[in-house]
Amino acid sequence: MCGRYRLVEDGQLKFEELSDVRIELRAFTPRFNLSPGQTAPVIRLQEGNLGVATLRWGLIPVWSKDPRIAFQCINARSETVATKPAFRSAFKCRRCLIPADGFYEWERTDGQKLPWCFVKSDKSPFVFAGLWETWSPSEGVPLVETFTICTTTPNRDTADIHDRMPVILAMKAAEVWLDPEAKPDALSSVLKPAPDGMLTRYRVSTVVNSSRNETPECIKPLEPQKAA
Image 1 (cartoon, rainbow, N blue to C red):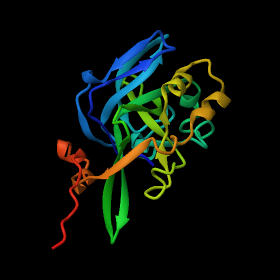
Image 2 (image 1 turned 120 degrees about the horizontal axis):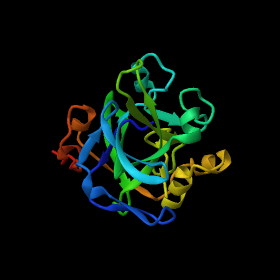
Image 3 (image 1 turned 135 degrees about the vertical axis):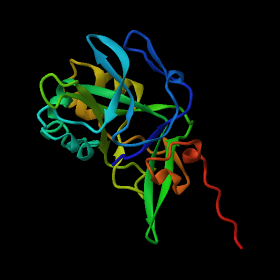
Image 4 (image 1 turned 180 degrees about the vertical axis):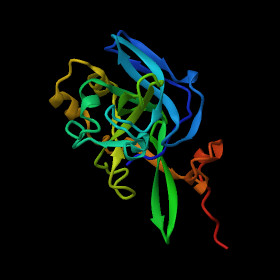
């Protein structure tokens, strides 16, 4: 799964096939420990225009009566995203990209949850494949827009820490994912693990374990303990 991520570094994402669009990440407030239930920037295509919106993490299907389902839908498994009732409608017509420059996974050691931060080897930003949805508890109540992150089997960089990883899309694959005319087979073809060697990782403090902590300390490399 992907349960925490970060968006800290300045940079830009360039979409060559979509009218040479560039998304400037400098416009985003740095986020050191993005957690389910919080709002985050999402890139989506609406009425032919690529733009950024702020949505809440944890998808609420349009048919749901209970918003608490969002915490069961922070991730969508790529193997079943086209058929699972919670996601299949969004898979058809409400796909999006979630910008990030790192994500966290935890290793269990001696009863402890020890976090790792995964980043690209060149430290550049990237995007996760995502879905978004609009939901309202009842007629006349303001709409809530939510999103989920697609996951897949791990690559060699992550497999020894967790049995799932977020789908990280190269820009060409991202353009396919956003294409409203893309066929299901083309969409499924981009939902795969990142190439081996794309990611590197480093230890971070357990301060990141709490979603209440949102400080630069979350991304600071943890210095190895010196022998006594």
